[in-house]
Image (tube, rainbow, N blue to C red; front, side, top):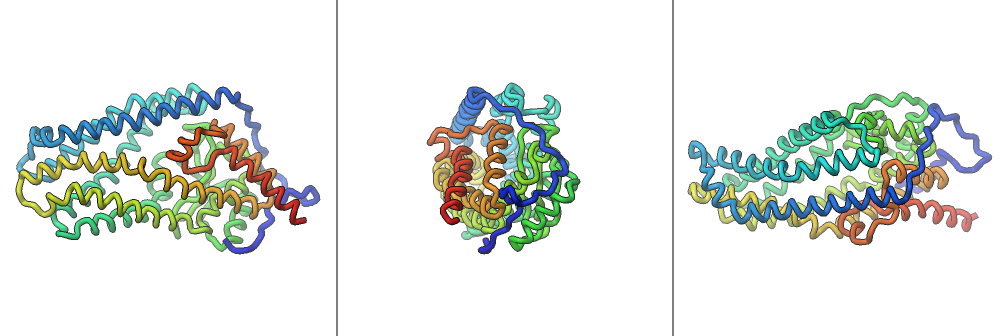
Length: 400
């Protein structure tokens, strides 16, 4: 980020503040025992989901060759055989995980008063997610086996290039095509706030194509914000739950944090990290599928299709192995953006109250177990993030 200070939202009492267009609604306090209970049950659900997924794909690795042989290759076509096998394997994965998904995503969220979804709305959300996943997964699956069967000895390189191009493409189109399928949005109807965020972005040398009110409250009571997209598709999304419960100073802090990801080049750095991890993933996939590359023997087609279960097991295990490293890098990026938010707004009070309110709205565990942070959390614990406001104030007082 450029070595400049932007004093939007100064905490100095002598500085006049613009009147808020929409007064923030009060956020009720939550019982610490309730927060602990919510995170404890989600922790168990997450671990159970991982265990079920691993067991499911291990079982498939053991039976896939026989099952694919039993299914046969309809019409003698390996492509029809691949389609049937993929539908059976992936469809089975969805069905096996559905009860736990329902319990965690619907029952628990309603129990702790964090969801506004009806059962029908929840089911429709899942169907949309399955359809989007099927389209993206179909592209990946088809591209993988096109490379294996037709791309020659360097097929692994073409797979890696395809994965990287797809990642960048999805980042580009996410706010334009994918996000609207799940959450409608409309232009932000708070002119002074929109202008303030535009000035923050402009001061950091960034142009945004629009600021939008994301209609999150139709499904959830949680709050969120994002700066999504790349280049001409870069947009600011502020959840209506955030707009209703946070004042302009607090929203400016949250936005300054999101802005930091782009000004520090975190998007491209994460794509670079993805390139490294994708290289490892493709290497492991190459190890399992290369024996069948370019073969015209139907027996090899069957073996190659059966090996898809091994590909899925690799894609389930590898994130657990490299998770401590990738999460540590992500948490470092988040801390950098928190520091930027404090420096750019120079308003530690707004920063502190914003994160305290986010914690209450989302029932975040302020101090999760160390193993959860190491293996699964890509953001620092909330208590550490809030403590940064005190550290900032101490540094500022010493510099005066």
